[in-house]
Length: 328
Ligand SMILES: NC(=O)c1ccc[n+]([C@@H]2O[C@H](COP(=O)([O-])OP(=O)(O)OC[C@H]3O[C@@H](n4cnc5c(N)ncnc54)[C@H](O)[C@@H]3O)[C@@H](O)[C@H]2O)c1
Ligand SMILES: O=C(O)[C@H](O)CO
Image 1: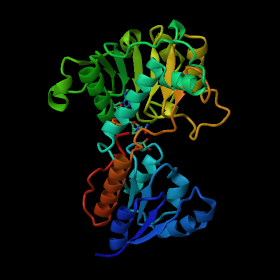
Image 2: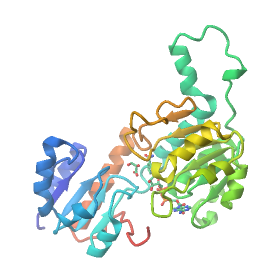
Image 3: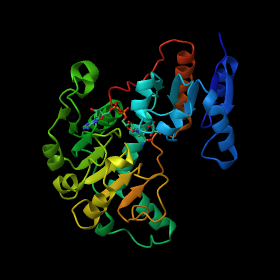
């Protein structure tokens, strides 16, 4: 088989790098690092395949890559990629659906528990030496079990969150998605437990509103002041999808002047979260540094799937996980 040129733009585990090197000429160059940018710029015009994540592969970058056949993202989200240009040039875009669902759902549940039971705040109280008497009602939390969960987005990860909520915590689940899911064939265990619900009704009924949405033209800024205003008093908001689906000023206003009780956020409109962002230190926000899939096992599984996708595409085979660039 012809050896092609592969540009790895974010570190891969050694075993996956070795799979690529066995079949192709590989350059590892991270364009975020000053010391590696020149190597990236030199390799890009020759590259047949790109593999990496968390870097914008935009129109300008693609214009510098005339030989490109495939971009393999080590992520399920594809908001960093210029989908129209990829489609127009017939460049395959691969991603990593499925292998991270359970891990991301665990992270979202950690945020649900942490916000509702004030885990971080009360742990800090102990660390600060302020646990000098039994805590009073002012520091009590709220139950999670039995409460109503409203899910914005009910895809692979949304359904994994719903399983935890419905089957583990006895929570009724309402969901909002582009279309209802046929639970009988896709998630029979959630039949009678998760219900496709108009957005206004979901927001009026949910104790927890969890966003697990991709970022696209249709979801950018979708969670705005009107959405927060429609949530029930004392609701908790969790975002595990993408930060830019939320209007962060509206979120802050809902926390400060509205009735939102708390927010748990793994994702932000700008990442890393700028030091000046009020969300960083807000007393009722539990912020995380985009760790949804960040376990050893899952990050390795993502790298393995992305490597397989790339090798298959460069061999002229249909990769295991192609993103349909026409569908976004
Ligand atoms: N925090 C993290 O580390 C982390 C990890 C993995 C994924 N994510 C994000 O989560 C997203 C979802 O992942 P997934 O695998 O569940 O995707 P998916 O494609 O399986 O599900 C997406 C869901 O969103 C719904 N949706 C899309 N556009 C909508 C709209 N305009 N209005 C209402 N619903 C809409 C779809 O109908 C579907 O139910 C990813 O695209 C990624 O951005 C974040
Ligand atoms: O989309 C994803 O896979 C996660 O957000 C990691 O980038």
